[in-house]
Amino acid sequence: MTISKNIQHKVLPENEGATLATIVRNLKPELSWSRIKKLIAQGHIKISNDVCLDPARRVRTAEDIELLVKPDGKASDKQEITIRFLDEHLVVVEKPPGVNSVRHPAERTWKESRKSLSPTLEDLVTKQIGFLTKKGAKGKSSRLRVVQRLDKETSGLLVFARTADAERGLGMQFFNHSVERKYLALIPGTIAPQSIESILVRDRGDGRRGSAPFSQPGKKAVTHVHIVEKFQAFTLVGCQLETGRTHQIRIHLAEKGSPVCGEKVYRTTVNGSILPDGSGFPRLALHAAELGFIHPISGEPMHWNMALPEDFSKLLQQLRK
Image 1 (cartoon, rainbow, N blue to C red):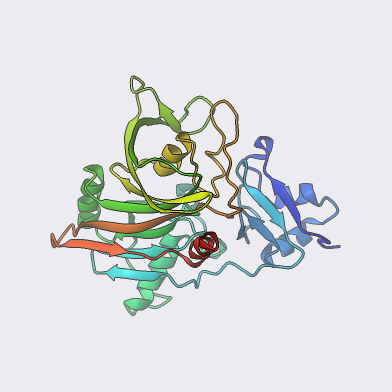
Image 2 (cartoon, rainbow, N blue to C red):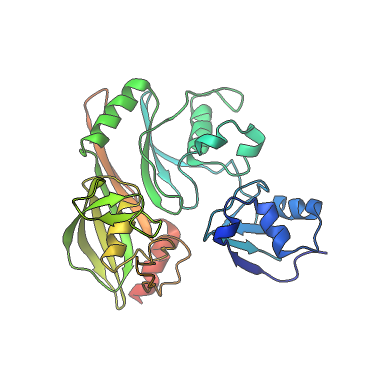
């Protein structure tokens, strides 16, 4: 007994926190637990368009689970990450879409064999630095220190600190909002060039992050938006962060009625209406295209640009036609 046709399922609130194996068993009760674990190990199951090989992975509300007739390949901890800059103090890398930036604190005690089932950018870069510095697979490179994150579906430039001094120096620059961060986002329709300023809170009233009245306690967030390219039904916008709050660009654009294409969380407004998309893009069309800061040790100004990943670039090519 196996999967006879592809099955798609959206995780319901009552199943929040259930293991992937449990969800698959609910969808295919005729399968044994051992068969389910084998299917997961063979790459038959996707979560939000990414193959997941971990049967104990906890699912979250609204995640898309897909059971595949044919396996879609195995996730690999051998994925090579493009390193744009590396010295003893920091590393700047190009994050591909579909990879978590860092591991959840609760997962840091996992055995390496389990971590390898769903490697994070932090894991992949640490291993790659080990090889580049001749320490190899058996050697241990210094742990990376997290100073910024990008959402799993977002691609782009990201910096890790490698020493405590660099972590403090970069942390101060992020705190003072002096780090240059520019993003590209595709939205349905269009939006006027503007600076969006609001107070972001963890719960805007419906359990989602969002903006609240300025009289309410929260964190100030400022996003500067300009037009990069217009299409018939979509617009490519540039977003420069003055502050860097969680999901800031996604929230600000959605609250202006222009959610990022591929958005799954903030397309629903506070009153329950669904904002249109129409792009069919399977992930967030959001890319961290520029990153600039002062080297925390040498004091040298540093700046990088990164081209759009292939899937995002192909989407724009189709829109131009």
